[in-house]
Image (cartoon, rainbow, N blue to C red):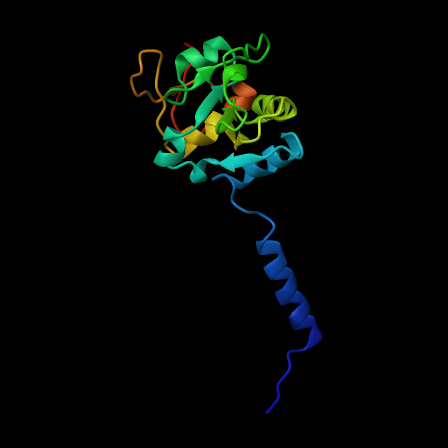
Length: 173
């Protein structure tokens, strides 16, 4: 017996499958992901927080493109502070062009621009951390303070952007 599904049922099933592929769960919050899709620089290569394992973290140079006061509250362990408004890439430009580099900021906007700049300078292995340090914290990855001590504190940038930070202690100092 050759049973065929009616066309309307096939259409609905196809739509359901297509719709389920629309969001890739790049970050834990669907609302955060929608905001990031609208705001982050287009065509900038990125890496998901979930893709950064211990080995990747140990063999990668992390660049923090937030402002000094944000970095001083907490940052990814061993991250090199380069800033954004008064960016200083002098140490980065000494690295070989094939160095594995992950650039981050609060959500990925500022770091996306710096990622593009480094690629334009000829660096070949540079990725923007999708969702930034907020998603790093949201996924309960380790942050350290200026003394290298593990901390839950994280600078929320401001109230508007800080709403995307769902894990950790929001701290401006």
